[in-house]
Image 1 (tube, one colour):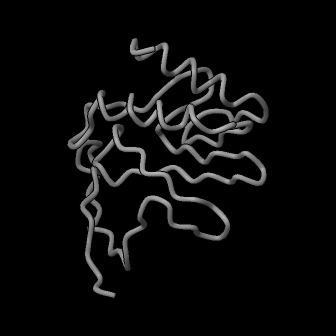
Image 2 (cartoon, one colour):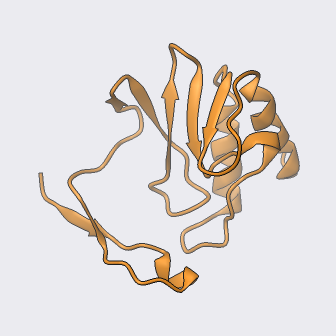
Length: 125
């Protein structure tokens, strides 16, 4: 597998970090340690993902959706409000009980309600 490097957004926050070498690319539907990769662009470039644990109904959401209906910013290079809404629509199709976001408190039950709140907050639901 050919190694490649990804740039970071660290300069936007006054930091300088080197590009991060990547050994490969995760694709939508891949299974990693029992977690299903869900392609969820919008917050950042199109390669953004969430990880879904169907057995425990857990969603590792990163910055796609937070507790209480918050969502990640879309003003970063490659971000898209429209793509984020499509990602939220996709996540709404899962019976999410727990959400493990990139920021803030996790949700341990009724996570689907937080996804619905995010869809309403974005004004497309």
